[in-house]
Amino acid sequence: MGVSGCGKSTVGRLVAEHLGFEFRDGDDFHPSANVAKMRAGTPLNDDDRRPWLLAIADFMRASQAAGRGAVVACSALRESYRDLLLRGEPWVRFVHLTGPREVIADRMKSRVGHYMPVTLLDSQMATLETPSDAWAEDIRRTPEEIASSVVARVRAG
Image (cartoon, rainbow, N blue to C red):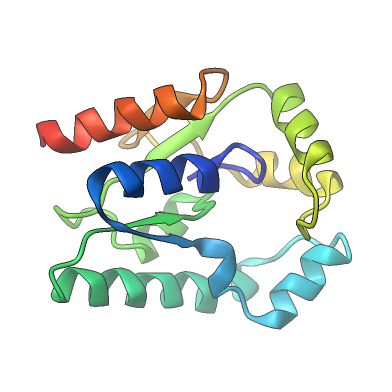
């Protein structure tokens, strides 16, 4: 979890690969209306986010019920969003990728083909409610270092 451009997809894919889990990008669960709003530079509101978060939660429940591990890259910026994403379930863990705004903005500017403009970074940072119960990882480390840290924590229980 974390703001756009923090490396959720990159790190999530690595973690899933190391653990033999399925990886899903939360962006893939957005309805087309949400993508259009973000592409136009309009921040999403809670009404926009709710069906998106519930779709991700449904995927997580289905994976758990089928006995499959999964890693989902999702911004989950507010506590209420994390609650919808099954916070408190013993099989759900949140990893907060965090770092300086300047680093994240530079990453966003260098991305090709992503619909989220750097102009929405400040609204994401303003929305972010830093979780006290997530594993925090500094994005100034390499994605491989972050993934190794997360995998070690998962395996330790």
